[in-house]
Figure 1 (tube, rainbow over the protein chains, first blue to last red):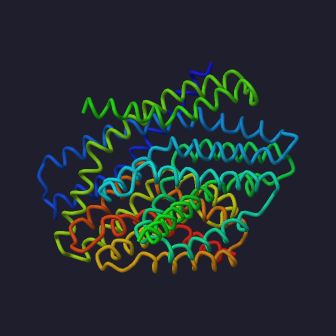
Figure 2 (cartoon, each protein chain N blue to C red):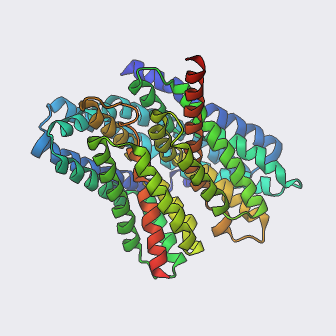
Figure 3 (cartoon, one colour):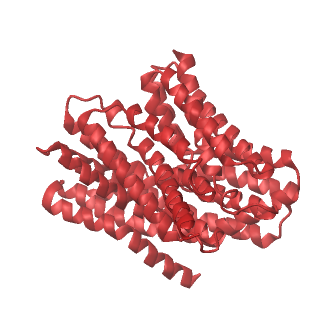
Length: 243
Length: 231
């Protein structure tokens, strides 16, 4: 029974992956032919890597859409039927952490940070900072759905805090923090956490699902910006303390 | 590549296991979702696992090294305009092709009851990303601090959010995350590192990163402005 749904829309997903990657390849190859004229091995490696990645992405996206989104909704609905509303907050924390922990693009970023910094900023440090940040904000986001708090009440102070922090944190961490905001909203967050928010909002009953069920993704984008800059802040204080 | 594959399998296993274990525990204690929803989750988890292994492998063996070389090669051409043009083009083309943008544009069409056609929103978001990607590339070349650009942009976002009709606000912020598609993100990261690696006196960290973060502000501002104009 479930086999049908697992393989359903396989073609649409594949088309989406091809559609997303094609323009980038066309531009890079055009500039390669006109201006860059790099050795052929680089071009072949790029094509090989793209092919492997695209087929992986195809399986990955198909999996999260058919399995993670419906299950996220089921979890959200189960949480929404709790007698004690506040219980959604620890669960939000837990799910925020473990979904980001499994998000592949977050790992790529952390890996590149470690390489670019020649090991002085460790991969696991950034990973923990991103995951903890998202955990806090998903917890906040779940509370927002449970208690019907407007999204802007969290987003505006959040971004205002981010603006202030970026003048006081370690310079290197500013760029990493804002990139981390981009990668944290990957396919797993976009399906599982989206489903979680929608399910919770449905279970709440008398809510406008468009206003309250959505918006969790926007919080996930803000979370690592603040937590990674906080990490930079801590490191800066530590350096000063030692010196 | 065999060693890399082994490493990736272990890494992805470590990454995915916590999520899967928690869900299995919850299924039997709390959630008790219908058997077909749960079995579908387990089946899809296997697909997700295989998919991420391949995805990360391809990124590591092909896309990241090539992206860095391309970025460095571009910089060696010493043409500011060429680099800005490429950043603009890449920003625009990858965004309008991203499947997530299509989903977003359908939402916008519903919210505005047809006042904003799907195509129009796609182009608006695309131009938003392109503009900010070009600015981000310019920043790497000219070497000014990212803090100025970020502060100015987010101040604009905060100010605009007070004037934007309420139903456009979540849409605007959600569109910011749409631009960072799974495959686009690593390529953009690699290009940025490549661009900054050639220039003397640049930090690979504070100059090489940030392209992605800046690019995702573009659509937030673009959609907010659109919301204000439509009303």
